[in-house]
Each structure stands twice: as structure tokens, then as C-alpha cells.
Image 1 (tube, rainbow, N blue to C red):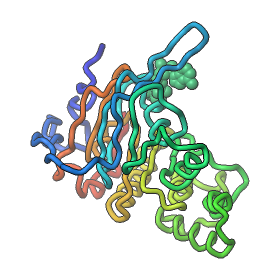
Image 2 (cartoon, protein in one colour):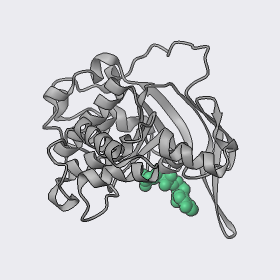
Image 3 (cartoon, protein in one colour):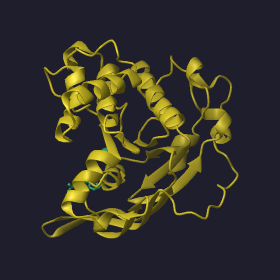
Length: 281
Ligand SMILES: Nc1ncnc2c1ncn2[C@@H]1O[C@H](COP(=O)(O)OP(=O)(O)OP(=O)(O)O)[C@@H](O)[C@H]1O
Ligand SMILES: [Mg+2]
């Protein structure tokens, strides 16, 4: 098995400008002890997929605490359980054992109506392939979750516009997906995730289908939402550069969290000005 930390600790490439050793990325001081319950608490979470006779143990006892307002990256090899964990965090999928509390709510104890409410209002999802409707304007895509939530037309328009402005697409309201760049399409998807004012954004490889410049724009927008709106952000990525723009990196291997490191503040702050020409792995 490969050492999962080696991915992050490989010497960095051109964006590093003379800082070949990545050990400075991590804040070696332990996180301060806290009395209050964490915002998100997974405890010994297991997930077994049953395929007839065959069982896949996708999560094998995951315990993670996340505070409100954190921005963190989940990394790990293909099949290590990253998407499974995200689907559980977003209540899109049930887990087999353990517990999941969000803001003192026992997610396992929610009835179907409460689960629907949870998915619509507590979390916003962003996917690798954008999941936009073809032939539908940006404004309409972002308005859509509000239609399901029963919001009036005038409020929908106002909120959808505001969400698109937050992702810097105030000048693309009537563009359809095929009239937008990949990065712009992903930002429409982020606006759609935002419009119900969730407290958490869950993004599963949000830059996976983007070139490095568009990926940087998307990460910049996500960073701003985290810092300015206080939205908790959990993103899955295979890209070290993306992970370095979060504040914490959790590495999964074979359904377990095998590393949990904080990115030193002086490293992640204010990196964008010099990073627009970065190369992804
Ligand atoms: N619906 C499913 N039914 C059965 N097995 C599944 C299902 N979804 C995922 N798995 C299995 O669970 C394990 C974890 O899958 P998961 O999709 O969480 O991995 P991942 O870390 O997101 O990988 P990738 O980086 O390729 O997206 C894998 O072995 C996968 O084959
Ligand atoms: Mg996945």
C-alpha cells in the first residue's frame, strides 16, 4: 500500500517557488481542545454495500469531528471511500453502523420528511460533472431548488441573482450551459448549491473536470464563501494544489481516515495572486 501522506509531501512543483519541502504546509501544534460538541461528528461510521453474497466494506469505522466554518479537503486513492463519506454527510445514503450528528441532530434518527428538509436546506452539493440541465439559463438553474421549496417568483429571482453574483456570474444570468466555460458552469452549480443558504457545502471533486485556471477560479469562489459567509466546506480532491487551498486535509485509505492535518495559516492565506498559472497533478 502506498503511504498516503507521500502524495501531499512530494516536493511541490512550479507554484512553490523555492519551497521544495512541503512539511511547512502543516501546523505542527495540536488543535486546541474544545468543550463544546463539534458541528459535525462522525463516530465509528461503517458502510457495507451488499451485492448478493458479496460485501464491500466502503467505510470501516470513520471518526471525524468538524467545526462550524472549517474548510477541509478529503483525499485518498480511488475506492478509499471519499464519495461514500460525502453521500453519508449529505444524507444521500444511509450508513451501516456508528453515528452521525450534525449540530446536535442525530441524522440517523431523522424521518423521511426531516431527511428531505436536511438535504434541501442544511447542505448544498457540488459534483464533478456540474449536473446542470441542458438548454436552461443560469438564472433558471439556480432558481430551481427554490421552486421545490415553494418560494415566490419575485423572491426566487432576487435570491438566484444574488447567488450568481456571489460566484461572480452576475453578467451571465441568461447563458445556457453550452454558452459557458467549464469553470463558469461549475460556478452556476455552486450558486445552485448556495441558494437555499445551506450551512455546509459538500463538493465531490469540484475541479476534477476543469483545466487548472478554471479550477483555480472555482476554488477561489469556494474559499470566499467559506471566509466571508462562514459556510463549512468539505471537498474531495485528487489535486494537491486544491487541498493546499483548504485549511485541513483528511486522508482516507481503505475506508479509514489515516491522516488529519491542518494547513499552516501563512501557507493557505492570500495564495491566489501568485497561483493562477498552477499545474494540476
Ligand atoms: N453503490 C455501490 N454499491 C456497491 N459498492 C459500492 C457502491 N458505491 C461504492 N462502492 C464501493 O465502495 C468503495 C468506496 O467507493 P467510493 O465511491 O466511496 O470511493 P472514492 O474514494 O470516492 O473513489 P474515487 O476516487 O474513484 O471517486 C469502492 O470499493 C466501491 O467499489
Ligand atoms: Mg468518488
